[in-house]
Image (spheres, one colour):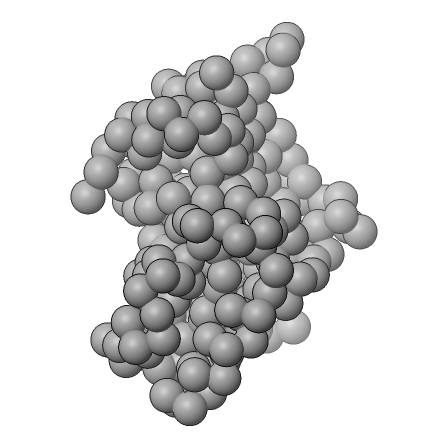
Length: 233
């Protein structure tokens, strides 16, 4: 597994300031943040290689088209969910390959395990603020984040006490705390994740922004389902 510095260096050498989703989640895995199992297959390797990767990952899976030419994967149809068998995988592959990527020679197919339904979706991010330096953010995530704007912030690095405060001060904390008899979310895993992201942002000033959204949280553990990391150099 590559190191954080190696992942960042690879993007810099290619003069890319935005890590692919695959690279971003690979980086998270390096610092022990759980992600769904993922495999990247260059599109040029063809259908057979993709279908073999799907089989080896194990259904159900998610299939995503990776290309610098695609900004919003969901809006362009570049994300296929709940693929349950080889036939539906073949259909998803055919549909993804029809998406226009301006003949991007580096386009690839990311095959990921389909994460189980969570208690809720959360967002964690970081930003290099011109005045305060590295800051970390937490809130209720998914498609609701822009509507609810229910988030908390701290200056990195943070302590376990800081992380606990961040979690409890958002209005949506009730959802994490077993609202209406639902399971309570694993807050210990969440605190550890917040500390790790704050530490990563503090130690690597070249990471301009991080956006982990959504993170699926469960009564036992969590998984970063999508991630976006932007560099500055």
